[in-house]
Length: 94
Image 1 (cartoon, helix red, strand yellow):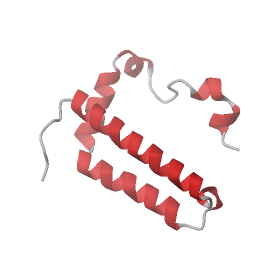
Image 2 (cartoon, rainbow, N blue to C red; image 1 turned 30 degrees about the vertical axis):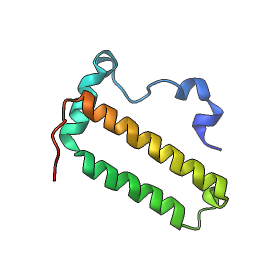
Image 3 (cartoon, rainbow, N blue to C red; image 1 turned 90 degrees about the vertical axis):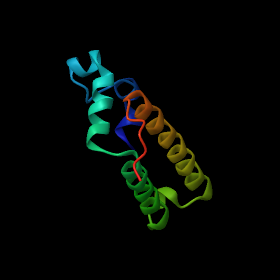
Image 4 (spheres, helix red, strand yellow; image 1 turned 120 degrees about the vertical axis):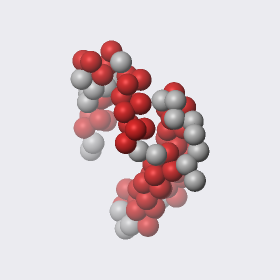
């Protein structure tokens, strides 16, 4: 079983952010979008989903598990778009 399910209180809070980053989370978001473009993030996110759906991983053997993965993919992509807007990186990259 995954540790985030065994210790939900620990994993229900930021664990990777430094004290400074916790005080200025927008700077973390801005830095992230300086390193990655939104179109690249969409590509990598889809690559992860595709790897999960096309592998013989028993974790995604049932249709409901695959549907759940796609639901979370869509939600995460929407969060990336919102964070992108917050970071002030609203220009389109074609």
